Length: 471
Ligand code: PHE
Image 1 (cartoon, rainbow, N blue to C red):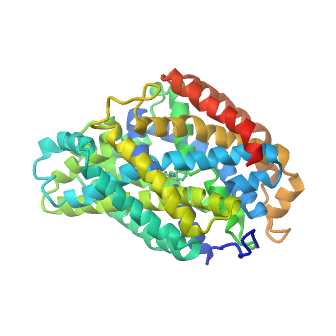
Image 2 (cartoon, rainbow, N blue to C red; image 1 turned 180 degrees about the vertical axis):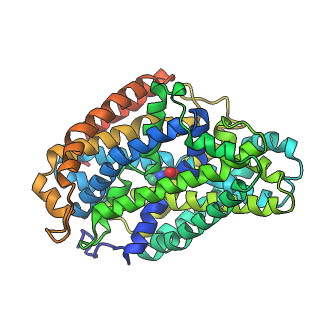
Image 3 (tube, rainbow, N blue to C red; image 1 turned 135 degrees about the vertical axis):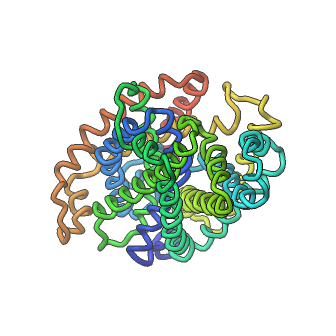
């Protein structure tokens, strides 16, 4: 029972939980960001480093988030607070990150939605204009806002229906659909003449291009892609029943997320090489290069392109739903708000943030704060600062402030399931992971070129640490 006298919501089934958690993990990070980061960082060498971080660091962090969440039965803030008020701020940073990511993520989700329709309305008919039309579209003061609002409305619909009826149902339908679409497109790309060069680019490592920045990019991407470091998996874990095997579920979600990223790479690079496009195309890759590829595919082009953007919408939607849920669960747990009130009020604020983010790419591009527009402000603060620090705090909290026996009991369901690697996991979380994240995060944060923004982000964390005790 919680303060409002209601029983805590629960996932309806194991499959449903896995689909929801994988839905959170698989998102724009996999399909929009992973391929362009791979392209910019030398292909497979980046992928190898990424895989190392995912399976050595992030899998352990995900196990820790599930464990802390289920053990406390509370969302991000409550989970930390139930141990000590000194730690409340770590949860608050998570909720704040959720808000900030929702300040730009639905904007990109809206673009994807628009491109489903654009695939049929002449976008592919003029391949040479695809790049310019993307630039004009995102800079338009009205059109992207309408798509963003539509995308957010879908989030509101799903999250207001609750954990099992809303989030879980969406995941169960949308996730399998996403994998089928990606497989289909990858199969088409792989059978094109010249596709093998793309496969080679993805899987034959070239370490001459690896620098310190490659490690940074890989770690940041691993956290973002697995939805870690902001209490999302704590929140999802808090709805999990006591008979679930946490370590096994975390492994399944991690493997699904990684497969989705690799599949997205396979859906793009072979076709890209086959048609002679450049792999290092940056953030516009998905919206410019991908439609250009489909434009070469004749009658099948528009249909495959629409499928591709449906997959992107689906991936983005199940992730943004989890971001909204982090905020909503906090308001329900700690402020005793009803679910509907929490959804409506928080999404109203998110709409306002998204409007600023979208306009910052067009008519308001001259308006900056600490050297960046609203879109980059929300993105850089979370991706480069808050998520890494959130992950670091979670590892320190779990390793040093939660009793080892409590963790063992939680992870083995009171001794009924085995977790042979418990000692290894605990050693990683307690000693290795905090050091690795600290080294990479500190170098990363120091290398942010907008120094004002960097100081602002760190100041926010410091202020939260001082005032959050009272929350
Ligand atoms: N994992 C999501 C993606 O890859 C983004 C996300 C980050 C979702 C943090 C929830 C929490 O797009």
